[in-house]
Length: 334
Image (cartoon, rainbow, N blue to C red; front, side):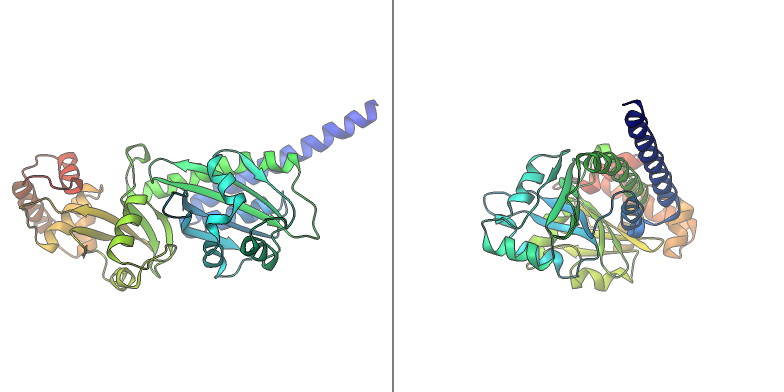
């Protein structure tokens, strides 16, 4: 009996050591890799500890009476480009997705091709999603849900209780480090909300998006279904920094290394800022310094100061905090 107990202790210690190495690798990835690769590379590191055949992750809205759940930003490992679009066709009938979205923070596991909805079962069989394991988290700052789902095929064993525990602990760290990366890029404290922001690669693939920005794009550019920015917005990415109009709102595009930060602003009534002035104001309110703005826009620091002075006068504000507040407030007086 003592020998059996010792084997159990040794196995637990080996697993703990492997998990610690996985977390250390995740921390290094957060420093060395951009947000575009961080989640994928992090899950590949976790794959050495808990093997899986494929993975899917991203941001999703929950189901409402008028619409099924929708994936707005996603990434994948060993799944086809069409995966999210295929899933969306029967998303409203997917019981597994409903369960995971309604029980945030819990690891949900099932096994088998037993969904009563024929399209859902056909989708699972097509991609050999015999053993799914998923966890979702609420993202109050974005208004959406963050999810990570791992899959094993019919020839593999189901995810065990121990593997589910490791998955839950790992995803806690993965989500926190990803949120820190996004927060650093948009320069907004996630506790204050980032519903009107987005982060995209230069090719238009989304790395983060808030519910407010989702709703506006969907309203102003009908037919958009997430994950990749609409063609009208992608066409402007190479011009960043710039401002484009979406209905009554302004979408500021700011370069950030290989990414572009999208910031939604509503023009206060009675105030008309020149496009260059508005871009300077948006960048300054987002946390950029005079020198950074001058470098980004190829202006002199003196010109940046002049533009900001004009914005302060026209908007009737006296500080950076007031400037950001007025620019984001719909219907605010001049």
